[in-house]
Amino acid sequence: MSISGEIHNPFELVKLTITELNDVDTTGTTTGDFLQFNGSQWVDFDLLAGNNTWTGLNDFDDAGKGNFHIDPSVFTYLFDDFTGNAVQTGEYAWTNHTGGVGASTTNITGEQNHPGIRRWNTGTGLSGYSGVNNRLTFLDPNGGDVMEFVVRIDATSLVLFRGGIQDSFTAVEATDGYYFEFDPLTSANWRIVTANNSTRTKTTTSTAVVANTWYRLRIEVNNANSSVEFFINGTSAGTIATNLPASGRDTGISITLENDASEAGNQLMDIDYIYYFNKNISR
Image (tube, rainbow, N blue to C red; front, side, top):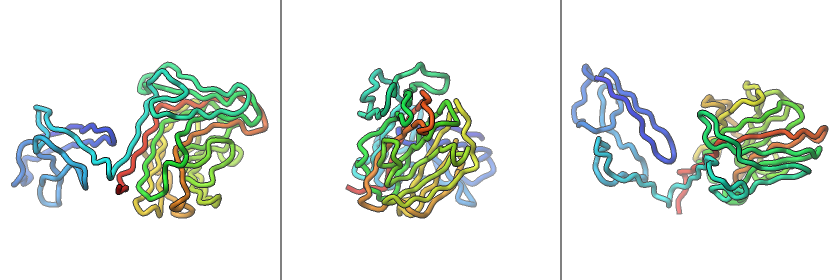
């Protein structure tokens, strides 16, 4: 017997593939159960953990009944695919931050596999910058933060990129945060960064930045806020366990591309989506 399927919810995509169960003990399970292998047999398991609950039918079935519910007292999230018409507020009241002559924000035509794209232009000022942020004091570090975004830039010189969970939206580097950095004057590769009260840890990854190429960048802070792992296109790019922002060092979501102050560039940054969640809260 072969069973495969996908579960879609607003927060994560879970893929199940169960194969060749004919010769495996499945005692105690019934049609419709989700199964996991415990070392000796396939057993039923609870899809939703903690205070996340499934109401309606006990199992998912072809009828598609039941309600997926997330307890907002222990969970927060946002996801924006930039499919709306507005460029000044967007679906989540983003602020498009720009500095310098000609810096701008526009929507551009979607592409295959990339519906909804917003573009930022650094303009012609030597220190021009452009990007997006939300309220940069909405997060008090407590662990459990997960952020993912898909981004591309059109140049690998004369630019400086920083994006992630941080407290800066200008050309000034963040005082506190966990973020990705691309500084071609230092390295041709992505770098991963933590900052706590202006004390930083920076690690150069093995992944080079290629112009006009989409990258899926992900940041996962552990629940203790003692380490953070960074991912590039689904592959771990490294973990940092020093200089994570402490409680009270508030941050938010911010992604910025800037000219490197040596030459005006009109450099472009495109973002396909921004995704954030945290299941490590109690309120």
